[in-house]
Length: 490
Ligand code: ADP
Image 1 (spheres, rainbow, N blue to C red):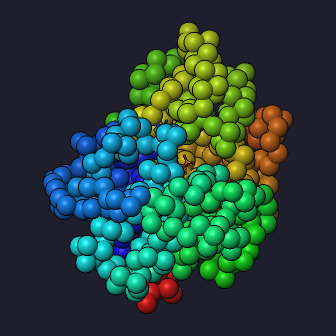
Image 2: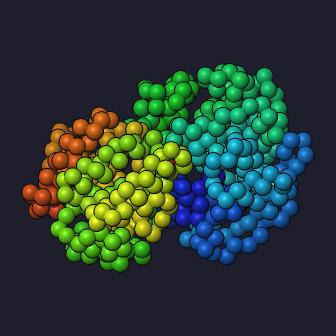
Image 3: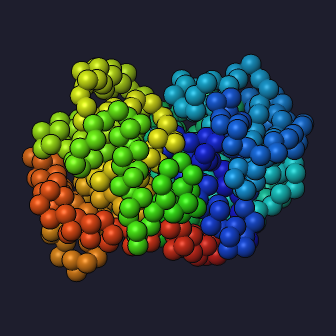
């Protein structure tokens, strides 16, 4: 099969969170299985260009219709750790992708509507006719709409779309101007409840809703989250739309790319180890302490790696930090916040804890340090308010770092409580789960986890090993996506 992924991220060149990991990992898995995969991305100025091999101009004169005129683009081609990628570079006054950051501009809805249109236009003029376009999140929600309403009639009628929702919180809300920009035009047609009209604001268009309505198949990133999305308010107003389209909607758990996240081969960690020999894990713990100037004492290390925002339960992350310290553990945090208030809050904490030899807060994005933290820690805390899939707990399991998570979304499908999970025998359980969003819930799960570390070290080692034995690679989800592609293929 010929599959084109259209997305706003791909690890490690353009990664903000899990979406980037998924685009790279899934593409690689599909290629290993013999399919032809191409990835289309915006050519951001802030990409990691050092991670692209052989970057060259592949198509110089792409003219993308926009607001009655056209924007001239260059399409670049290069290989990101073996995966072929096309990067779209528009030459216009708006400087859509030269903003120094990936998201967060006031005209994001225009930037990514343009990107979606440019990706289709590129496929059209180069005569590329993939069996499947797989697009992701609100940024590419208009792509299925434009394919069906405009490009199908120009010879792309056999192309089918799989649309994956990684986070319902951001849906791409815009006004009529995007219809005029993209050439979709007919306002009254698109502003209808069964097409793109937002379910709550009748004056707004909703890209993600368009993606759901117009795609041949829609997935979200774990079966449990698919259930939550249909039956709770976690889908932020799209529950009814999902209900209407339930016949083409399901959840497929994300995988982890074990060629990137694997303590046996990881180039970012000083000592390799595996489930049969955990000595390297101890040495990495020491290396982590050295790197972050933590004191070297016989204590457990609890970590947090992830974005610092409301979704991730920041108030509970903050609480867990002090609770871990009060229980004699060390705490390491790596996170970045886009919200100013949260950013200031954690910078203040960082200054406050600066002299504490048992705590380190690293505020910012640091891929390399993330690997060392996973390898050197004993526990990771993931107290998310909601979590469509969550990769950090799955990465941690592979690195022998025991997850303590809130039982929502993909966390439910991947972490099984050592003490209370009734559905699995003890030797299959791999972490700790709590359900409430209050501090007491965190304390009690952390008490159980730290208690095991302090009092029953052999049982703790066994729990670590059980986690490492889980296979959360792309093998199963890769096949599930292929099944979906086969189902919808023309
Ligand atoms: P989300 O996609 O909601 O941000 P996930 O758990 O699905 O969360 O994926 C997070 C990914 O981003 C993981 O690969 C994690 O290691 C990485 N990550 C998150 N924050 C940082 C950071 N500050 N520095 C380095 N890597 C980070």
